[in-house]
Image 1 (tube, rainbow, N blue to C red):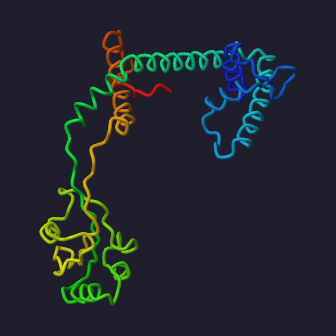
Image 2 (cartoon, rainbow, N blue to C red; image 1 turned 90 degrees about the vertical axis):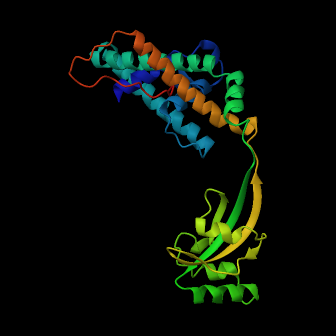
Length: 275
């Protein structure tokens, strides 16, 4: 705890003076705790509950007060010269440098232009995709299926109510809804049955599969549009950033002289995250 406290205090002390120009939120032996300190601590601690902003801020302030008190005690005992402290500080320093280097390298490689180019390659040539939304009720035999079809078609019972008796445990609780499906996702047995059906229509003939007999309803048809550049950008950016991070690390390792002295396997490229 004392080592972690001293580390966090030293990190907070590294925040530029201009960033600490905000008013004090608390003082410990005359040393101010500011909004900037709280922002840095929140980012570094990472496990603070974000639901209640005021309670969250007070929790961070309380943690900083404790950290400052314990860190001062650690410094008074000279623990900043302890080998364990220096080793941990060296690790944190290298980790921070790694994160900053990768972040800057990724920013250079992943630009609006590269995102646009990736979109044009991967998405721009796609065509709108037809989809259908289906509901079904699975029963054991054809007679039961026909009984349901007749009842639904003549308004004696609703499809959703009958679906609650379905043998399909996954969809029985949501009215038999299979959601929107593309052509290659539609069960083979259903494809021919719904080919000429209209939205809202219950197929007149039960559809047999290896699981039993299905009462099928075509709920809707639609065409899924091709994602716009704006819609696709977050996913493309994430993929490009991940690839760029791996490429940077792989390139650096290929140029470094690396010796594995314990007989273990060669180190693999680390994850590309910058934190």
